[in-house]
Amino acid sequence: MLYYDQIGLLRCDTRTPAGYRRYSQSDSQRLEWIGHYRKAGLALKAIRSLLDGHEGDVAKALATRVEVLNEEIRRLRDQQRFIAGVLGRSEELEKLTFMSRERFVSVLVAGGFTPAEMERWHAAFERTSPEEHQQFLEFLCIPEVEIRAIRDGSAQRS
Image: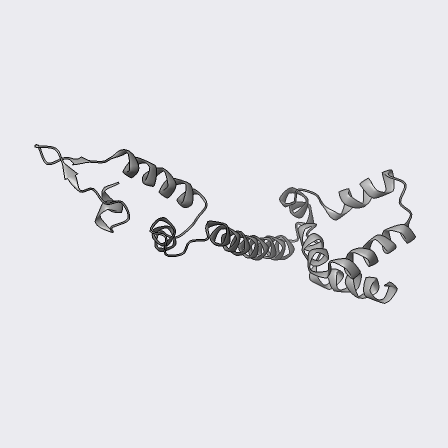
């Protein structure tokens, strides 16, 4: 709290006779919001703007933060794939993903999808939501060269 007070994020206007800061109920609420926004990863400058009413739109600030996190996660996954590839440890990729390509395909096969139906599924995904299709394929940790081939084939079938 002292640091927040020093940078003006949390202002204490009253002190006890012994010189200790005395925070009000509204100060406590402000500190609680600071904690929530810090947990979301917002910068102190952005938090100050939100709390002081200068930036206004909390939803917009949080949506922007999610976009930044998604990009950071994508870059980290790329690094994981690169390192596993350099080390020749394709089994490491299986540990790094929530769902591997192999697991996803096995679920589709168990659900009765034929290879032709899987191709149609990809084509529909590419046609209706190309960016999300790309993100989904990246989520499965499919190498970029294979993603390009899947998306190109899907676009041709559409």
